[in-house]
Figure 1 (spheres, rainbow, N blue to C red):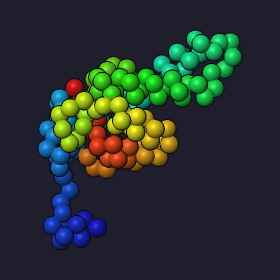
Figure 2: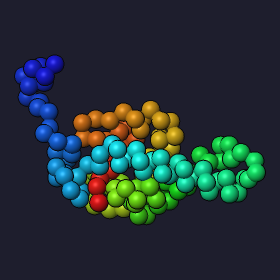
Figure 3: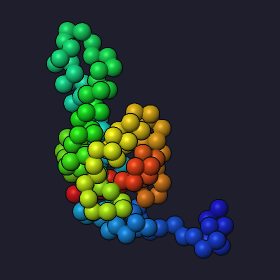
Figure 4: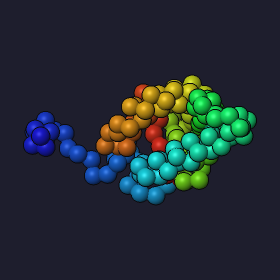
Length: 141
């Protein structure tokens, strides 16, 4: 398969984000999977704790998902990072312009993440389906 790719004039990038003009490492480079996963888990736990504070002693149920959407969409819209992302020093950025992600892209990313499959399938640049569809990428700070 690599030979077919080389014959077609395509070569595998040397590092994640190279095709997008990102640096190989340091600030502005594509965030590694372990940091993204840790940020996601931190956000899930935070959402569960916040929801439990309002629903106790009953089990929070699906309300945690709504809380997770709020703590994901609002901060990413205006600051580029969820609380978990801020902790792990990564952020969401637009691929097409150096502007804020904005509410529409952040909401699209959040809703697609709810469906899990788009969020766990990555290309070589480290962008999952929800990033590619929303025109975003997760970078190191």
